[in-house]
Image (cartoon, rainbow, N blue to C red; front, top):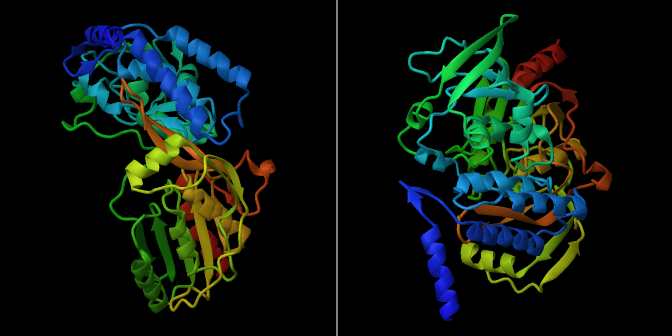
Amino acid sequence: MKKVIIIIGLLGILTTSYGQQQYFSKQQLNADFDSLLVSIEEIHPNMFANISKEVFDLKILQARNSITDSMTRMEFFIIASPVVASLQDGHTHMQFPGNDIFFVQDKLFPFPVNVSWRDSTASVSDDRSEPKSEIPVGAQILEINQRPIQQILGKMYNLVSGEKVFFKNYNTEVNFTRYLYLLYHDTAFSISYKYENQIFNKIVAGIPVNQRYPSSTPVQTTSTQPKRNISLNLKILPDSSIAIITLYYFPKDNWCPGLDSVFRAIREQKIRDLIIDIRNNGGGNSAKGDYFFQYISKVPYKQFGTTTIRTSRKQIEFHKSFYNMVDTTSIGIKHWPSGDLVPLRKTEYKFKKGNVYLLTSNNTYSSAASFSWAFKYFKMGTIVGEETGGMAVCFGDVIMQTLPNTKLDLGISHKKFYHYGATDEDSSHGTIPDFDVPSEKTLDYTIKLIMNGRK
């Protein structure tokens, strides 16, 4: 017992703080890394589905060799997150401690950016410098401190969990300045950029954190999707008999009475064409998608086929503490068949006469991706947009863990889902649209498609 007390005392001495920025010892960080690995091994149903054990072990060795004394949570994240991201499971992820940037004393990159995954380019979307840097909004960044932007983005993508680059892109865009600081610790920037087909070079000073992030209240940046207070919105286009339902997410609460009101309005307005927009829907409760289908599907349906579930001690403990659920399932891996289709019930305001269009994007993920797959599989209408970020065969149902020392949060999938009718051959792609259109042009394209069809 005496020896344990001495070790704890030493750890207390090695953990110091600078303002509210905490520093951790090598021993503490290795303990957190061990906890991370043990949690993944115990909870995940198939952690080597997308990476070999040999390659994963090499990444573990590289990470351990990078851990040193007196590192911050953000610095540890830079080391540990690529290990988690290498599993190529968008639900298994480390949550980036974005608020920790508010404790940094160094100067930061002054430009929010728009990032395109298609060609690994980044363009300036705003200038937070005072006085302004004179680099115009829309300028395409070529290099930052002699580092090609493609190289910088590649390092950032390695930090983010996801099956495909396009899903990682949103997180990279939101956290570009934070990642840039953590990767390179630059405080002044030599920028090469292209604007109106000319190439320019300019040296720009960094700016304080509160100038780059003007809000005085730290904001949560770990989510890959914007938060909204409402789950859906109905818009009826005047003089067109077109209705647009935007589904921002699938809520946990009961939205059934709201859907009755929405589809009653659609009937009263004599809508001929219905557009359902899930381009920025990151998921939620899949059961709500099943309920929505009652209003548009002409046949029985189902979102999921076979499901593999891993029950573990950590998963049981999480469900008990977070959901107050007592799980009596025995520990181990079980495979559940798809079961029966969801039968159609009598729905008073069902959309029976007219065409249905579904708008998707690379940001359509999780329950929204399974919604889009069932929509296409059961031929409920036409899909316009981009391949979904959520794959047809995917992991999910996240079990959250908190690392003991840094208190970084780690999410781990404990189920593997097959969308209904999908096989392992579909594991490399999401829902493929009928019309492949860039996300920002999808709505206009669909409206033109509808109007041309009426001629």
